[in-house]
Amino acid sequence: LQKISSLLNITWYPIDQFETIEAACFRIEQLHASKTFAIISLDQNLESRGGQLTGTDAIKWLINELNFFGLIISASGDPLAAGDHLKLGAHIAWCKPLPKKDKIYQDVYNALQNLGIIVSSSSSAVLP
Image (cartoon, rainbow, N blue to C red; front, side, top):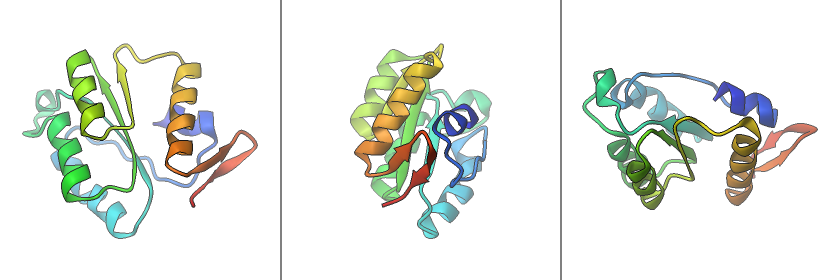
């Protein structure tokens, strides 16, 4: 996320990192309650970090229960999971290894534009 924010000159969102969705839930709920736009990147295999929820579970929770306001990026080593994530509502899916920075930039830029977020290379992103 730090690479993405510097590539797009985004300074309006906090960067928090968590090992599992369970650990991130409180922070995500805080952002949601304050109607703060967020970018979330996640992997499918979150159980390896001690969590109970998978990336698929997390996306279902974000979309169906939380009505999440933000950008969801799947970054999984499992191409089948990446496809599932897109079907469930993720905006971007990258398989590992992650793409080069030009592709990251273009994908995030396009996704933000599709969400109605104005992004320019000379200024910070602006929420609608």
